[in-house]
Amino acid sequence: MTATVPMARTSTLAGILLFIATVFCFSVMDAMVKDLSARYGTWQIMFFRGLFSLLPIAVLVAQSGGIAALRTERPVSHLLRGLVGIATAFCFFYSYGHMPLADVYAIAFATPLMITALSVPLLGEHVGWRRWTAVLVGFVGVLIMLRPGEGLGTPVALVALAGAFFYALLMIYVRRLARTETTAAIVFYFVLLLCVLSAVMMLPDWRTPDTALDWTLLVATGILGGFGQILMTLAFRRAPPSAVAPFEYTGMIWAVFFGFTFFGEVPDPAIWIGGAIVIGSGLYILHREALLARRGR
Image (cartoon, rainbow, N blue to C red; front, side):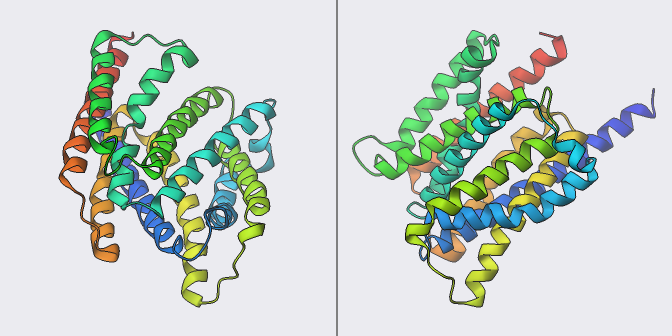
């Protein structure tokens, strides 16, 4: 018994460290996307993101049993998950090109609030008054950041908010698929659909990369994205979601750092205030979910 507890703690710590590395990979990728957005269309960047993420994902498939891990009896569910995932990527990638990184991240942190709200009609889960209150308080924080009528109350900010909504919907789909599908299948079919759809959509605005740096950045977005997905998989195998999820907010540190260092961006007070409210609400929801899970409710 005494040996099992330290082993469990070691596993949880490893999962947390892996998830922190996951957030770092995605944050670096997002900074690259922001830089590339000044020269290339969103669909073209998404194409390279999907194409070169197939390299690390191929490793995941091989380690999961090869082609057998990709067998599925739910192709329509994979199609819907893929379309929602593409909508999520498009909204965020587009927003990175038109808004400060930290602003997009702060708005995206509304995702846990939306997952809680959507879990009732889509998953039939029970949400008590405490979590509903946290959701409402969190959306007050979102309104502070959006400042309707001025500042972030723009169509681009609403695109970022739509990205958070699609991301929440995506997590719901993944929860459903994870009951019967392998992680390799869920990731592979999404990336395959991303490559096909973005390849078609990018053609009207295609621009051939003309520098070695741009080629490097485009390839790196895909490799980092795929590698980040593998790290995330490993993190959730080592530790429960309730333990690692709060470390999603470390992304704000990197967003502020990259935004200031490479793009001269400084978040205004509304972002700090609204973001703190959203993060606090999200952490409370995660705390309640972990508490109810321990109670078996």
